[in-house]
Image 1: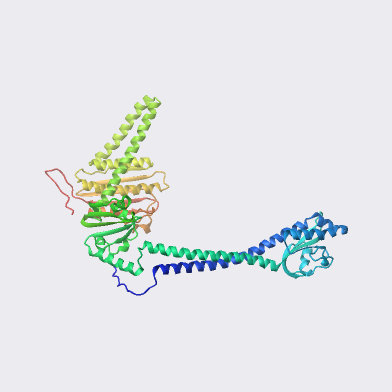
Image 2: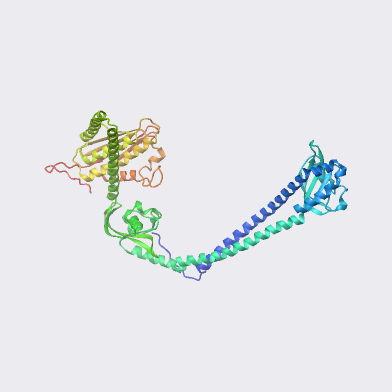
Amino acid sequence: MKKRSPIKQGRAMKLQTSITLLIIFIVSLSVIIMNGFFSKYITENTKDTISQRLYTISRLVAQSDLVIEGLQNEKQRANIQEYANELKALSNIGFLVVLDMNLIRLSHPIPSEVGKSFYNREDAKPSLGGQEYTSIEKGPLGLGMRVFTPIKNEQNKQIGVVVAGLSMDKVEDQIEEGQRMILLGAIFQLLLGVIGAYFISKYVKKILFGMEPVEIAQLTKERDTMLESVKEGILVVNQSGEITRVNQQALKLMALTEELELIGRPVRNYMPTLQQTIQTGIASENGEALFYGKKILLNCSPIYIDDKIVGGIATFRDKTEVQKLLDEMVGIKNYTEALRAQSHEFKNKLHVILGMLHLKEYKELETMIPSMVDQFEEEVGYILQRLKHPALAGFLIGKMSKARESNITFELEESSFLKEEFTAPIVHELITILGSLIENGFEAVLTANSKHKTVKLFLYSKDQTIHIKIEDNGPGIAKNHLNNLFDKQFSTKGGDRGYGLFLTYQTVQKLQGKINVSTRAGNGTVFNITLAIPMVRDDNDQRTNRRR
């Protein structure tokens, strides 16, 4: 563990003050930036809105029958001035001018301007060609935004132009009004930020029990010293079951050198008892467990704050190896899966029998039941003839049932043969190895495109050596994965995987064996294993397993 330097004492800004100022700074910076963005947006949006309103009004006038008739009939032209001024007042725009094709005003907010030529004829010329557009130019009413819209008669011939406009002073007034609203919102937001910063800093101070950073650092150092001074392994987890602290004695028991190898990992992968303790809140005292190949005396306790579980702590002393515990867990899983598969297949057959009874197909039933029994006895007899140990035979029968459920052909080669003189622990470890490799084979062939999905098993014992060969016709293993195949938590199938082959490799090593993998892309994978295992015969001629 890294040696920590002494804590330097000195005057520093209080934590609550630091948090408050930091939050105020962040909120202020955000408000300034957002105010700039919104201000620009309001300016552009206001101009677009005014422009669209002017277009709407000018198009309304250009399509007015009164205006079209007035442009074509001189006797009706006087009506244009009255109509334009009324519409200007209703729409609250600056001016509404109707021009004939000579750009002579037929309406204007200033009556004396009626009959005169348009002020800026160059600006109006494109509208005589049927073009509709916006411009910002100076006129009798000052600088303004204006929209030019051609007026056409029923024959689609242009007979005049409508000019709708608004003084730029009024445009700027509307923009400033929008910006004032943004400024008021920014001030309100900043005020909320200051209030929020105060309460957040107060809350942080509360959950830290009123301690300042220097005090927390001192407490952490004291805790580290206490953890390292004890002779027991200590493992601490948070509420989520992730490891947050481990002392040197625990690392030693786990054959690790750096605590970083464990920090952040789920404790259920290392110490399930502690995971159960933080879930149930029930402490476990003086329980025996196997941990990393060592038997340990284990104490687990939940950590409470305000009557709420926030984590857990485990203390343990070395008793023996933890690896055996992990192997037993895998073995139990394999036994369970085998029993489940057999139970599921048996249930399916019972459903078939029940259905035939309901249909009163008694003759068919008389034929089918012996066939089922013969098939089962043939399969059981085939396996028991080659594998003398009942547990191992039952395990393989279960795997065959599971293979049939997945439409996989699982074969035990005819030349397979194992004597029954194995001790129960050896059989258990064989089931651990076979369970992992067979399951890997099943998963591999299920991902292959092959129509016939096959997994073959060969078992043979001779001269105190067991030979195992498991072959599948799956897609094979990528070359870049072979070097990491037996690493812990290495898997190509997602999270919470990568333990089966790791445990298999550990078990093979423990049995002084060897494991070899051969694979080709698209042609499946073959695992060859040899195990050097002394066997036990009868009471008169016992050979005990000496590996210790």
